[in-house]
Image 1 (cartoon, rainbow, N blue to C red):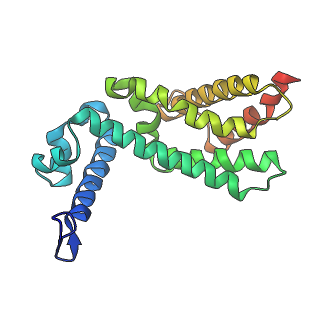
Image 2: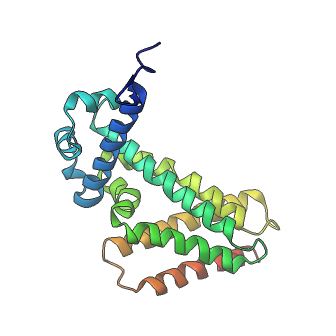
Length: 203
C-alpha cells in the first residue's frame, strides 16, 4: 500500500492534502476578496487557515501561485453558474436566457462580494493576476458567442462577444468599486438590454 493511499483517522494522505489545499484557497479568497492584494501574504494565509508554512508549500510554490489558483477557483464557479443558468431557461426565449445568465452572475458577485472582487478587481491591482485575468476572457466570450445570432459571420460573432464581455466586465467593476450608483434591478435590466441589443450591430 502506497503512502498516498494509507489511511489515518479514516482519511488518506491525498485526502488530507486536498483538504489543506482547500483551506488555503478559502483563506486566500477571504483575504484577497476582503482586504485586497496587500492583505495576501504566505504568512497571512497560513495564519488565517491555521496551517504552518510547511503545508502552504506542500500545495503552492509561492504567493503568486496561490492567488492565481484562487482566481481560477472563482472563474470556474462563475462559468458554472452561467452555464447552469442558461441551461434552465427555455431554448427559444432569448430574453429569458439573458435574464437568467445576468441575474445569476450578479447574484454571485454581489451576494458574495469577495468573489466579485477576486474576479474583477484583483486583476487590476495585483501583478500576479493582470495577464491571467485577460487570458480568462475567451472562456466567457465563448458563452456569449453561443447565444448570439447564427445568421452572421463567425468572426463577427467572436468579436462582438469579446466586446460585450469587456463592456459588461467594466460595468460590473464600476458597480463593485462604488463608482456606479444604481440598484441591482436596474443593473440587471441594463445588462439584459445590452445582451439582447447586440445583434443590432449586424442588422
